[in-house]
Image (cartoon, rainbow, N blue to C red):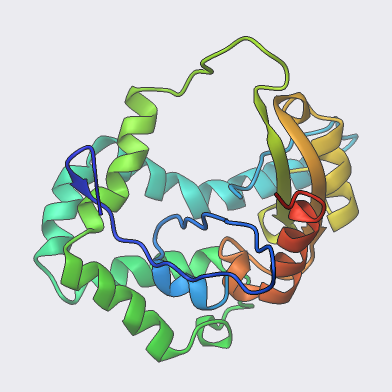
Length: 229
């Protein structure tokens, strides 16, 4: 379909049962609709005061190494990178593989989470549709045109919200799954959301719907339980 003159690829799968709930499942990058075979944006948590700052500093450096290069190049030199990746059948999967490897909770073995067929399928979709540039553009636009609420009500996001966290992406000072949930609920972002179901899991990384589909699916069902039309 076309939205605002932009072609949008989608897949429709009818629900089962007498009154299925219509849901829109979207995906981030570097991912594709292939994710729906397994399948909300993860919220952020504040850093609490620590008696010993060394662990927090080490965790900050670790997260910077994982995320900062990716975000910086996409925000400031995304078009240059996109032209190179769009013209290189070796460079594109190499760039994607680095993200899948460092962002997934794989214990140093990316193939423990994704098979070669999984990785090649996702890379092929990006290559065949020449869509690496548009997938990266989000970071530049989000930086240049920051989102602002359309109203002054509280919470800002008034629709019922479910959040799923994973300890692999815990911010500095937050250790266990229980700490992650508590840090969010007592932090400054909790008031933004009408959150009705907040969970955290020890297994899974950035691609948690693929890495831990049972837990993520259970969270999704629990969020929408009782909200049938």
